[in-house]
View 1: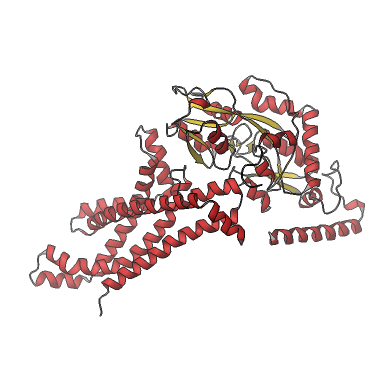
View 2 (view 1 turned 180 degrees about the vertical axis):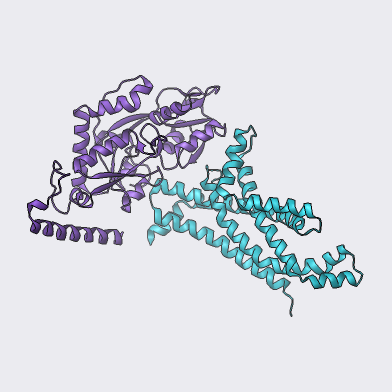
Length: 220
Length: 298
């Protein structure tokens, strides 16, 4: 028991720096994932067929490549092709674009969850297509995508560990834990604290999502 | 820790029961293949390994010429592998080579995944607190590897540059000491360092000369620069406190060195590529440990 606390106290600066790097990785990647994901999701629900196809292409590409492989392509592949991409950009872009594919699918299912009958009713009452979207579809879709987006955020927090593991792209929480472990050999204690660090992030994310859900809830 | 001890106890019970049964069956039940293998006291690691019929040896899979997978045969080969075979032969058991990277080799020994580690592991006092070491079986030195067009000429000119080496290797400390202003990139395996230096993602790789030589064999646009700046005596890793097994492994290594097998293995894996010759190590374990006094855990 005393070993456990001793490891944390002795290596607190490394743990803290790793934790902060993970937070930054997740924050930057999540912004990319949400922005790109919404855009691609919008492409997926347009009435224009070839635009839908473009969106589908994006989703299938990024959803069918393992994240680790994507990181290798984004970093070593591009560098071999002569593009001087940095580890941080390669890492966050990969995680962000990868997660965006899932966000796009979530957005699509959220829009489809709004009954077709409501859209038709809106149109027949004389609303323009744009106003049907902004007044009827989007408000309802947003509510129904919050819980699955929360799951994606949690998955992304955990996936961020792959960035540190692949080619040492970032000294994140897991990487720092492994470095401390390599020096101290206190494997159980070190990885206990790494797990605790990830738990802090995922539990925070869970509560944040629940808070949002409660704010947006519609009493039916 | 508790479970590991309990497992060990079960093994001992199992070995005793098995020995009793074997004795009751009489001499004609003796297997024929292990004819020359010596007998060891019941309960010793050697006897247990003979009982199991195989020894799990952790080696590198991506570090030519010490432990690497030959793409033509899919078999793992190298200096460490040959030494591992010599130890398995002495026991009369089959060697089962498993991949042990710098980061996981000590945990592998501690949790029983590997019975022995031969994985280009430098003897250090910190590591000696966790596991036991055999006598040194190879002496490597730390060098710097760079692309052909690099302006880095030695470890002293690494300031401000990025240098790749493996997590859990001695080079994290070596480089912090010898090139304090270099930026370290600590990856899992040396094959990743090779990738990174080839793509220009890092400016140099620094580790043992033999490992770097292996990279040059794979890509001859890379080159070694500067003199050796550290001495790295390799030892076999043995479970902490297993004195009998350590004595046995030390004996095999001494024989390997004195009967000429060391020299032919050296020529086969290293000498023919570097054109250099070397004498087998005469360093003792104590001398090796003095080179790396305690830094962190002991």
